[in-house]
Amino acid sequence: MKRNLISSLLFATLVLFSTSCGEFGDINIDPNNTVSVAPETLLTNALRTVSSVESAAIGSLYSQHMAETQYSDASRYLDVNFDFNGWYTGALADLNEIIRLNESEDTAADALVSGSNANQIAVARILKAFFFHHMTDRWGALPYSTALQGRENFKPSYDSQEAIYDAIFAELDQAVAQMDAGNGVDGDFIFGGDMDKWARFANTVRMVAALRISNVNSAKAQSEFTAAVNGGLIEEDVMYPYLAETNNQNPWFGRFITRTDYAISDVLADRLRDLNDPRLDAFADPAPATGDVQGMPYGIEDAGSVPNSDVSFPHISNVRGQDAPIGIYTMAQVYFSLAEAAVLGWTNDNAEEMYNMGILASMEQWGVYEETAYNDYIANDAPYDSADPLPGIGEQKWIALYTQGYEAWKEWRRTGYPALAPAPDPLNVSGEIPRRQAYPTSERDLNEDNYNAAVAAQGADELSTRVWWDVN
Image (cartoon, rainbow, N blue to C red):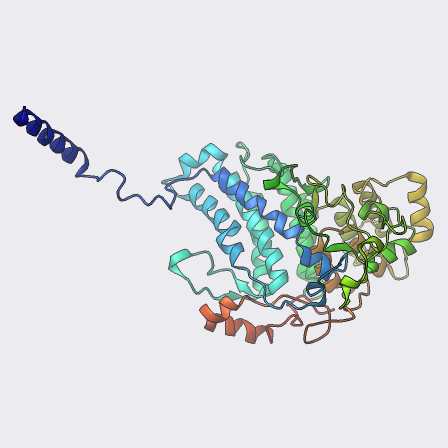
């Protein structure tokens, strides 16, 4: 019996050795690194980062749409350095991988499970341009042409903002041109894989970027703007679709679960009240003490001394509802951009008509459009000023960009409209509204030579340092 048991064990050992000694099973597979992934999962993950572009509280504080009710350090510009590393290791890395999977001969066939190769690459390129456009407008010069190389380059050099803008325009143009008639893309919860909508989205990004450089390269700006319009812009509001569940909820809902740190600012509330603007009641709830919308004093040191009952929080359903959408690009933004372009002589559009359409689109977006009230508003409260139209266009765009704080801040920096005063109790060195955000300290510590070159080219690394297009 003992001899048979030994023989059986020896046989089992030989079988195990013979079947595993060549490959050692899964011993050489790192369980922490994926071997393959469907591109659609990468796209979904990258698209979720769009929320960070539109819903960031700091943008709504810089643009003075919101004010802090307790701890007012952010609206008094205390923070100087802001981290961009998460963009490179997150959404941008995902998009780069989508491109690689669809371009490589070894993986392109398998990648077809998520849509045609050309369309997946096009969408990834468009989103990369969208994210880099947001990033460069916050930090200026950035790692671009030598970025996203992983272990091959841990210390990428910085490209100038002008070079990044040129690359963005090229990316958007080429991405739309390479779209094919194959199936759309999976994993797309913004447009449902509709490539026509992706093309229009790309052209809208291009239009906004073109207008942003209008003060530093008007010829390039007009050329890119015209190409974008001719290619076809969005035809309806593009909104980020939050869900009534914790993992995908509106960030403003999350901020108010246990705290009440933000209220509509007195700057925005007072201006809307002066204009008899019907959007005021859609933007914020009534203050309990008065029954009317009351703005929180912006950027004051003793914000906690103002009772919550005296101020108005963002609207409970329109702004901070768990599934309340937030604009990515809206028709109001498009119309106001077209109005400005008409004033500049770039198009044959009627500037006043585009201006009025922008107001109409914004009122419709916020559910307050009523024909008689609208006609009275554009005739008496906020009429188009043909003698000096740009201040009115700029102010109305600022209003329409409520909840899209970073975009409102960028447009204010470009146009100077409306005339915003700095926080009365600022904590930054200049005492002025920030013009950019400083690089993360990790760049100074880990990418010193390239960081120093970028800072030298831009002049400094401060909140007051202006980016290339900011010459207003």
